[in-house]
Amino acid sequence: MYRIDDAEVFCQVVDQGSFSKAGRSLRLSTAVVSARIAKLEERLGIRLLNRTTRSVSATEAGLVYYQACVEITAQMRDTLQRLDDIQNSPQGVIRISAPDQLGRKVIAPILGKFRQQYPSVDFRLHNSDRVVNLVEESVDIAIRHGYPKSSSLVMRPLAQDRWVVAGHPDYLQRRGAPTSLEQLKEHDCLMLRFPGSLQFQWQFTTPAGRQMLRLFGGLEASAAGVLQDWATSGLGLIQQSVWALYDVLDEAHLHSVLTQYEPAGLRINALMPEREHRPTKIGLLLDFLEAEMASHPALHHL
Image 1 (tube, rainbow, N blue to C red):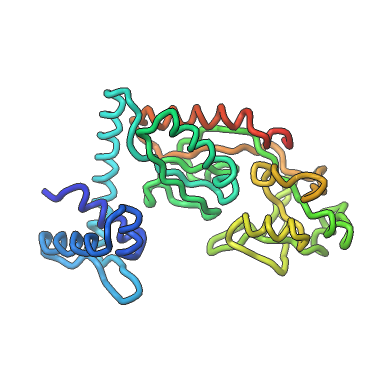
Image 2: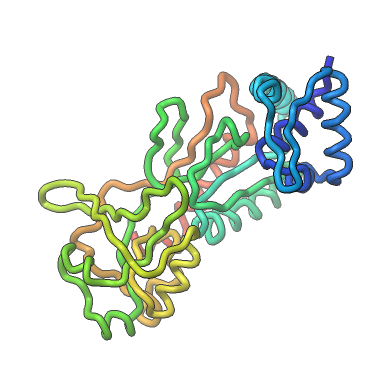
């Protein structure tokens, strides 16, 4: 019977495409990771990985074994979580994915407060505007603006949301503040773009209903924080959540425009894979997040 930790090491190597990245994620040296995989292949009597000087990828047999490992580690995680509940002492790792600015400005400080109360709970926070696959990437909670596309995810509302179009006073004075959606096409719109991204479209509410406006700008980035830096430097307009902009929505930094077209009914939600049994630590964290966000300074801009 093969050890669960070997399966987890193998899954991390496949997910990361690198022995060194997998080692950093697991807090193991590259040499230890490589040796673990070599011994695993020896035990199984088959090659699981294709290795090059630049990357590592699963062989056909490796993909079959990878799927089995994902299921086994998920079952073991559920078992350990049940044991945590029996002990009634929250502990272990919670893996969280959050958008770039929301994760850095809002979620990260709240996690720090939570850990002061429950020091046996560790966090792995991944800030990225890319939408992750919760099951394949072993994410326990994904904090997202809006609603999931997959009906297989469990959703927990955390807070109301508001998205604004905003620009620096210098930019608005130089270019003029847009008063209609059509005028946005004449402005420098700072766009969030990465492989698979749909963020080159901005969403608005009009008398005719929801409208997705396709826009282009000379500056694009894969992280919302970069766009915010450009906007506060007077380089263009952005559309972002007030949870990301609350600390710069003022007279000196960014002014919101086109408020009559802002999207309606938005929320920030916590998304989780469907599981028969959810650990106590997850429920405690969700309650804590909701309570802390209910008194956050961003609420002044909702």
